[in-house]
Amino acid sequence: MEFDYFPVEIDQLSASITFKELGEGEHEFEGVRVVAQFLHHPTMTLGYRIEADGVALVYLCDHEPFSETLWHDDAAKKHSDSIVHHGDRRHASFMARADLVIHDAQYTPEEYHAKKNWGHSTYEYAVGLAAAVKVRQLVLTHHDPLHDDAAVGAIETRARAHAASLGYSLDVCCAFEGLELILESHGARALAVAPTVAEPHGAATLGRRVLVVDDDPDIRALATKALTQDGHTVSEAGSGREALALIASDVPDLLVLDLLMPEQGGLEILQILRSQPATAMLPVVVLTAMDDEINTRSGFALGATDYVTKPFSIPQLAARVRACLARGRDRYASEQTSGGAGANLESTRIRASLEK
Image 1 (cartoon, helix red, strand yellow):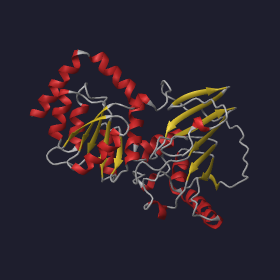
Image 2: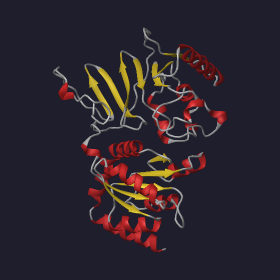
Image 3: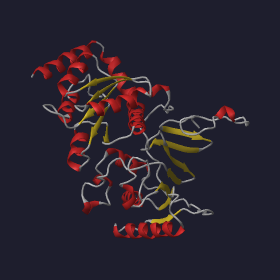
Image 4: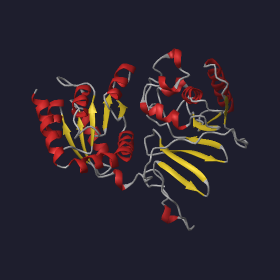
């Protein structure tokens, strides 16, 4: 209901409407536990896990894979530990052992490559993750408007065959008008959630100081445009050396870092930053055209917060930065506040690393 996406604003409606704006975290509504988690979409979207009466239902629409490289090992697709990207692994954990998952599956695998960054999934992605974390029942939805009944039926057949190929007895079907499901309690375990203050994704994630590091001026310009539209103050660096010098003098709230650059690449920069307490918790979004397993795992092993694959859209990068700030800002701010004079000492150490 924002004018950017929809022509009717809330104050134009005649009804008296009250609502609670949710952020990522845990919520209670009259004995029903609702856990919300950010999804991957060109705008900010939330998925919901609803737990009550021993039943867990998960709703995940307007979401697409974080990485085209999903599995570390094709022979181990039934284990969530084999998921390459931390975002996809976190997404799978959110639906773990649920009695019912309702998941976005707008595209076939053949269609997805032309629709990447549109914010939707394939049946293979939904089935693969659901099977890996032992979901009991999966309903595929958000059907493409170009798919008729026959096309949706074919997707259902392929989805069931894919589940069978994984050796998992996942009950999977496509949603249709009038579908009713009755869930029986199997003692589903409540999702463990780290202690957090559940906040909306609004002003607290906007207006931050962001440093964009990329040797391509066009990429820097695109990233700067995406982030200034969200009210961030954006600085730019064209090399790793320049970035380290800027960070040493003033640590930003978030770093957008290119993976491949001359002299010092993103992984080397990341390793230097993570070795220093002043920047150990700094959210770092890695930009790369290489989302293969080796580079993705290397980045996460060194402490990358998120990976965004080139080419990216302006809304996509803005949404991913918002999610990173919403998850990491409180912990990072606490580290900076408690560090005091120590932060200046670490800036000196970063300079020493730079000089070496």
